[in-house]
Length: 535
Image 1 (tube, rainbow, N blue to C red):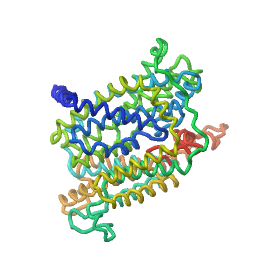
Image 2: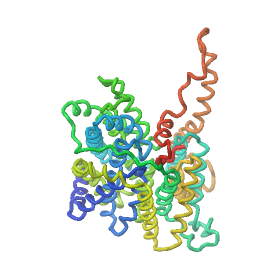
Image 3: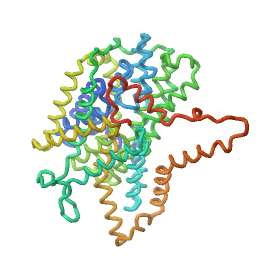
């Protein structure tokens, strides 16, 4: 009952005229930017983050919730109409959605994506409201050793599962941790990695880092691979669904939600795995399996629901533990820290009204998304016809304006360009972007928990595993790191256990990265990489 009353208080705050207006503006802005080719939710949120700076925190985060869900919706529009996923989790939607569009069913594909997003987002947000306080109660009981271990697990798990090369993932993480060290040591007062520049004494602003790596780096990368041929945008009328479409969609929506939320809430879950699992499940359960690969509506409904349920799931560890589990959540954590608010176990106690207003605004933004964007789908389709040179020139302009507005210092523009060039080079050499952002944000916090743990144990390293939960997490970390070696040994010894007379060929093994091939194929010909920086 306490959760329900807190949520009602959140609705009372979020539904005031000004806050409701900010939610509407956020949904419109998020969709308008997110629908543009190559801009995933993470880049949309990073680009529009400075827009909220003039607002007080509650209004800013209500607007931010609208931007978040608007960016998610925009990504499905580009996937369906252009076969251009803005992020890796939209790849599966593009498989059937674009085939439906080419068959003249773009309206139905957009409708089932939008309604499925609404259903999954609403259920996922309700689960967030119920689960987050429970996670908080658990987190409050943890000591510094366990909290340190959880943050290390989040860093290593996300880094280990991204891209095609663990080495590249950990290289990106190392860059992020190094950037996070810039500034004055909070304990000794010594300057670290400032190179004699006084303006670096306070460290690098996370908003500048996020905008540079996501927006500037992506814009430079796409500009270097611009296609000379204009994009063929499939025309679309007002989205609608017939009775048969509803009948074929409602079960995939619910199954997709069941796949998406748990994976989104895991430290290394993400939305890629549940969208792929949802697609495979719908293909097996469908009464029309022959349509898959040619435009099956279930192949859009299920994965899109899983994607949005995972988006709601990522808010649970973000708010309750202060742990971002994907690129978009990392940028949202940057928004919290820019207001001096630290997500984690104490957030619900110290900023209760703000948190519940934010959760309520997720419900409101989700409803507005459906109400506003279904009639506006033809308008968003016209936005896709913008010439790409103009589009990315505009992105660079707004990124520069946003970075300058953080501290009103020209030095931030130098940092923006330098880190933007770093983001470009990371894409060039296949380094994933998310580990770098997580390293910048979580690095100083991990350092703080490590020092606190060692102070409590008088410098004894055994203090790091002095709690049972910490020990269990370290075992899990070891399994994550050693799994490739164990799997390789298993495959090497497997032929010896094969019955005689049955040949074993090297081509019979499963592909190493089931989703990676889809991700690369979706970007062939110079398409922009997703925000997570697939290797």
